[in-house]
Image 1 (cartoon, rainbow, N blue to C red):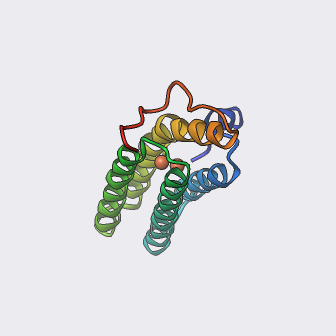
Image 2 (tube, protein in one colour):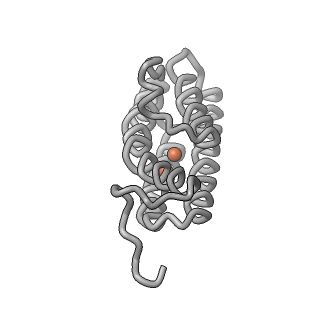
Image 3 (cartoon, rainbow, N blue to C red):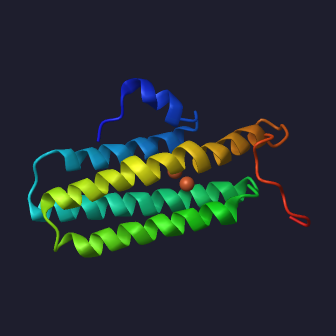
Length: 147
Ligand SMILES: [Fe+2]
Ligand SMILES: [Fe+2]
């Protein structure tokens, strides 16, 4: 799945650790555009799932470290995506290569891409603002009393 060169500036936040992990997700998904066989496809899907799970865990650690007030809601989105990935992985053995590739592309190019553009963008802005010693951005979720 190729991301147009001029689209990277929209989905990157100048947070190198996270930007690199996002790039890797799309690179791994790009492998599904090429011809494959069932064994390679399952291996690629398992590697993609592992990378996404690691990425989600690291994001949640970073959000917790900077006190991001939207952590719980963001974590719920990650749980939903992990469930979709595990479901796809469990069904893929009985699917054709084209079906598996299509579903993977839809999940990465749809759900994950949209999550990066919205939810990840929100916490990245918050984290950068807090690191700079500033106030939370106006778009940040409200901090609950006592937190
Ligand atoms: Fe992310
Ligand atoms: Fe995220």
